[in-house]
Amino acid sequence: MTSSMAPGNAQTSTWMLRLGQTLRAMASRPSGAIGLAIVLIHLLIALSSPWLVPFDYKAISSLLILSPPDAVHWWGTDHLGRDVFTRTLLGGREAILVTLIATPLAVAWGGFVGIYMGLVGGKLDDVLMRLVDALLALPWILKMLLMIATFGTGLGVLIPTLAFFYGIPVIRIARAAAHNVVARDFVLAARARGHGRLSTIGRELLPNVLDALLVEGAMRWSWMLLAFSSLSFLGFGVSPPTPDWGLMVADSRTFLAIAPWSGLYPIAALSSLIIGINLTADALAKTLGVDRAQKAPI
Amino acid sequence: MLRMILRRLLLGAVTVGLVSLIIFTAVEVLPGDACTALLKQDAQGQRLTNCRQELGLERSATLRYFDWASSALTGDLGFSAHSTKRISELVADRLKNSLLLGIMALAVGLPLAFLAGILAALQRDKWLDLVLSGLAIGAMTIPEFVSATMLILVFSGWLGWLPGIVLTPPSAPLHEFFPAIVLPVAALAMVMTAHILRTVRSSMIEVLDSDYVRMATLKGVPYRTMVWRHVLPNALLPAINVVALTVAWLLGGVVVIEMVFNYPGLGRLMISAISDRDLALVQAIALIVAAVYVLVNLLADLLTLVANPRLRTAARRLS
Image 1 (cartoon, rainbow over the protein chains, first blue to last red):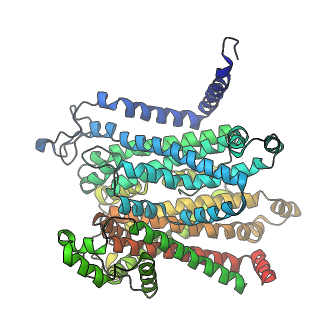
Image 2 (image 1 turned 90 degrees about the vertical axis):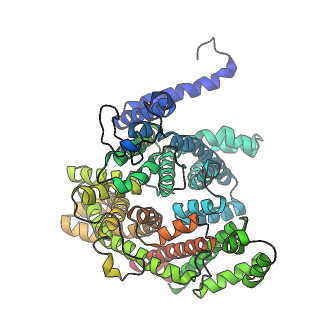
Image 3 (image 1 turned 180 degrees about the horizontal axis):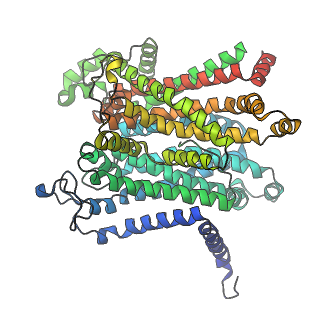
């Protein structure tokens, strides 16, 4: 720490320092470097694409239906004559936005409940874990579809639903990670000093569980993206004419044999982002030394 | 042993009961009921009251839940809001078709996954393992609708070997689904194989690294005998439960894959039921899926119990 820094900033700057160190360590692994680069490029495109794209994403043209890639329409046009390049560049924005909001929410609520249960234990913990098991027992798509059938589609439903269901497996991870430190001396000391539960969680448990939560969050992000695109593909996510990769693949299905470009570019975009996130999560797990056992999607 | 099995059965029944309660409540909090769905714009005044009386919707939610649950137990799932058919009729063909898809995928994927997983573990970090594990990770990370679409593009669009979508009506006899079923089965088996392969591989590696295997090697047990007698039984038993979990997870994948291939199964029926807001049908399908899930896990538990000598002894001691 340099002396010019105010004492209040000390903690923030340690965090920044650690973040920088972690990122650098991740980038020094080939998988991490590639993964981070892919994710970064996707984020940059998602942010800037409205100003980059050459065409209007909803401009329909009967003269350009399924025309192959050429000098004007670099990636060809779809079944309504819309520019595939434009739509692919824009097609990740909703998915990335939704998952980037829902993932931190999921990790936050699941993490808090998990740590709290790990600290408190007892009857409440028993009952809650049975409930968690029962909810984890249902296939993800059934849970999502039930919620959609009940509350309808739209981002106002999808974001809380994704955040809720994807937070449930986080409870387990956080609880297990908290269990490992609850009995340690520094936690007992904090309790003995008279710290309340919340302050013990914030000061003693959270810093020790954070690594596991970060890795879990990265993994959840990729699963959530997969779920969101699948829902869009099924017609329950983004509503047309807003461009979305899942929706574009669904639209291109019938014409795939005669116009593969209308489906292949969105497929490549979605796949590369998911693979990039997975590589990043893998590098993060290795850098932080978190044992990432194989996990089911939800 | 018997007591343990009974306990498992009871636990499975409780799970299904819990799920049915969740499903019922989810639909209950929704505005509108079966009558508003049936009558649509006519749903007002006397007709609505009559309909509600006829279907018994005036009664309390608790009563209706027990009514619904007890008739579901006897196989009567009520009426669909959009066709006048009984739900059990609508669902029967679809369930049969989905089971055909799932069982075919299991029949193809299971042996493949175990074989590839065992080979990958025995050849750990050599090129065969790298290729197999790489393929598995690829198949696991890519969404099902993407891999399924790619299969259609390659085998139907470019090579023209197989039909890309299924045009067979839901009630057709099973053999009429060939050859259109090949690509959906392949898509489903691909994801499943990847998951099980990874599990078998890591389970095998754990055992290969264990002290007793090292001991056997040092003792001079031939490699073949060691793999067959020491490694495989110990490594494959824990994999059974993961297979069950994967199968359950497949129930989700089935929905997507049925949509991609236009396959007349339960998943596609559910999607159209949701689009039509046919809640009675959604409830029924969700209940069936949950029951299948619990059944599969129950089967896996029992299989592990029967096959694992350690659990067998523990069970005997318990009872």
